[in-house]
Image (cartoon, rainbow, N blue to C red; front, top):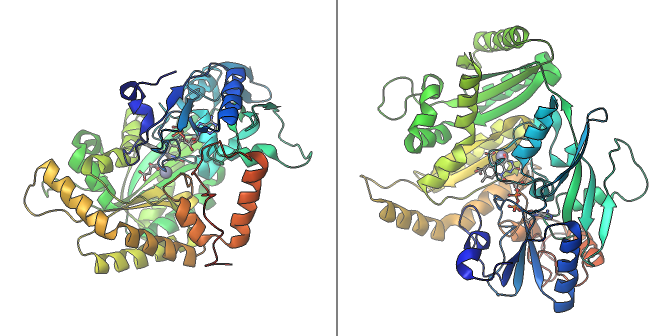
Length: 485
Ligand code: FAD
Ligand code: 2HG
Ligand code: ZN
């Protein structure tokens, strides 16, 4: 247990350093029984518990408030591999095991755990399930929910529910597993999970393609799905501004990709362009995978959807393409504060949304930088927005102050404009990062009174004392919304 503010500091703020709380303590139980004992004690003392895994969440869900009355409950010591069944293709791990470790354990047995995201070295399986994480392979394998067969959960009463079943089918009443998945630590504490494994594909081939427009990207997606079917395992979109930021802040990462993304630093080479990263996984061979990808891109070039493309010639080149994609968040963080969005839309609406939203924001906020990228194949965009840059070459502090001033004036209006359009187009304001504290009130604004009331009823039934992650997802102090019914 930690109680010293200095040693608690890394657990008291989120990855983006947007939220900082004042925990009473940070506790590190070693097994489910100890987690249960902590929960019972918290119930007796009416202390809020904030579950925390790798603390890589992007919605402030794992950050305590500043009341000094919340305890961070870290799952990091629960990291055992409990069982693996290669025939049933399941792995049972404790919640604090990192996603990368689960991937490694599967790989060591010739199997694949397909969940994949930029923070996988630190993010934990418990956090992945609590947020129902998505990432870059949802297109083929689904999100965290679809990769989980069973759970072990400590309830708000401090009891242990063992639902560690490795079954593909189980219709025996209410699905408690699915209730806990995506509940962001507000209904129970996940201590272990049974996860689905897949055969390793014989070959994985990636390509980077300059696309003429979001419409062209959609044409390419449709064609790739039609041609490659289940072999299409990744389809990521990066609008020019996102790769431009990587080139500006992480030049070495962008360098191997400049032929496609454009040399954005010295004006030499092609102009910055929108790019798509495509991944095919082939059950037979590398040559078959390469041929399939080259044929697909050849057709796309003939059709004018793709202007230029590079098929990775080695594992290292493929890794370089993925590094570009996964560095956008880091480059944007290095650039400074910005407004993050994690929206989902019907895939068919993506080009129309991008065109209309870009136009509206550019008109309202001249110079605004649209860092739009994401899991295009899932209809999930990270439509992030950074303030206009300052003229000249200001030092970091001046730039940061300018950005903060812009966001102080406009952040709420920008968020509302984006979310209003998303909702008008039958989308969602969070595809994969969850509500946490960042989008809690936005969700309340858009969801119907019926939906909020059902969510409140579930929360009251499972956590009547309100000790699990208070203030996240739902605000129980507020009356139900009357603005939408
Ligand atoms: P934490 O941040 O510790 O917690 C997240 C939430 O889950 C909190 O509400 C917390 O209270 C709760 N929680 C944590 N553990 C438990 C538990 N055992 N039981 C109950 N509740 C718990 N996310 C995506 O979906 N897709 C991406 O592609 C993606 N890429 C990312 C890239 C970067 C560079 C970064 C920094 C983040 C990215 N994320 C992405 C967000 C983040 O990595 C995921 O949300 C991840 O699933 C969080 O795992 P964690 O262990 O860090 O959870
Ligand atoms: C990704 O897809 C992550 O890279 C992070 O979900 C998105 O930085 C973001 O907004
Ligand atoms: Zn994402």
